[in-house]
Amino acid sequence: MSGLKRTKIKELLGSGKIGSEVLVKGWVRTFRSNRFIQINDGSTINNIQAVIDFEKFDESELKRITTGACLSVTGTLIESLGKGQSVEITTKTLEILGDSDPEEYPLQPKKHSMEFLRSIGHLRPRTSTFSAVLRIRHNMAYAIHKFFNDKGFYYLHTPIITGSDCEGAGEMFRVTTLDLNNLPRTEERKIDWKEDFFGRETNLTVSGQLEGELGAMALSDIYTFGPTFRAENSNTPRHLAEFWMIEPEMAFYDLNDNMDLAEEFLKYLIKYALENCSDDLQFLSSRQQEEEKSKPQDQRSMELIEKLKFVLDNDFVRLTYTEAIQILENSKPSKEKKFQFPVNGFGTDLQSEHERYLVEKHFKRPVILTDYPKAIKAFYMKQNDDNNTVRAMDILFPAIGEIVGGSQREENYDKLMNRVTELNLPQKDLWWYLDTRKFGTAPHSGFGLGFERLILFITGMQNIRDVIPFPRTPKSADF
Ligand code: 4AD
Ligand code: MG
Image: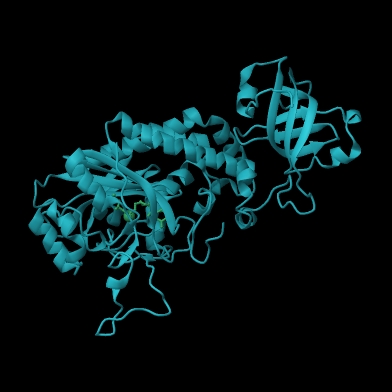
């Protein structure tokens, strides 16, 4: 080997190192006319072209340069002689690090369906679309930490294994080491959880909020960012059984402060993507424009970058749940009975179709709904004086529906206890949470942003299974 240090393709394409000797390593995307190799190493959406003089190579070696094979190439970086790229490499040496049998390699240089790509989750990160999504995902994770760090929030690591059900929806995955074929029993023939690993029943967390609140009552402003698990049997393009959630929790914030922070946060992330992921966004945009061509004119959606800028430049509409119900009841689809789930006045749990009607048809911009009926929201939300609604807020986005859910929290011990009793929640699992309302309670608020729903919005992808490297959904946990 030449002693040269490897340069990543992203750096090569932007470096202006014309005339110098370079070493690149990556995977073959295409090999054309026994002369032009397109190589990608994932550092950028763009490939580098290595040009070879085939007379200098054995036939048997040329045959091994197949789509998917891994190569190490040295040569001179020159200004490209052909169209389509600014620089290319005149190859001097070429080493095949890993062969890839073209008869078996499932990723051919042609368009594959998203469904097919899900079945080869181990290889799909090598496609342009998925590598673009994964790079954007990384950038968004970084921007989230940067946003909160710059604001003086502290990153709090909340547990993944818990004994409580924050959302109270009972959608939990049990964690146990008991022998399921030989369960220990109490005298009443019930399962004896005392014998289990933690000496109690445990599950994977559905939210880090309850522990997040403990952090806010000490550090003022915290956020969590971790995996969350929900055993809800919803096979939709917006639900995962394992997803990532960002949950800031702030002492001394009321619901308005909470909404202001959430709107600022979402806009910051969109702006960060526009400024730092433009190559990948451009690629995803042209890919979608291609797909849109097959749709009738009036069903085509807004171009991706235009859509991101639109959300960035406009205030989110804020209204109460009760106002939204009135709009929905008077809407055309409601009158013509076009909604799959009818809107039946106060108390109706809004479905994605209703949320999207408000955002996409009625207001034509993101919407924040507040003051939901207490009966359809979690126990910890601050109760309004009407005794009917709570200080909740959901942020609804085009194409996604709910992207953020949050609230001001009930800080009054007695009111919170009333709710716990009314809902028959297990006090033995919540005593530590209730304690915060006994020792220096304070008004506070927070929200949860579904990370994958954010990535769906930013990338314009259609299905949540395609914005997480290895999706977990009902009946599917491969890779
Ligand atoms: O509205 P949710 O259930 O709120 C909470 O969990 C609160 N503890 C948050 C808080 O106040 N700290 O979930 C918050 C967000 C939703 O708005 C949605 O974006 C996302 O999490 N989400 C899911 N994303 C993917 N798959 C699922 N099954 C999801 N369930 C919720
Ligand atoms: Mg919610």
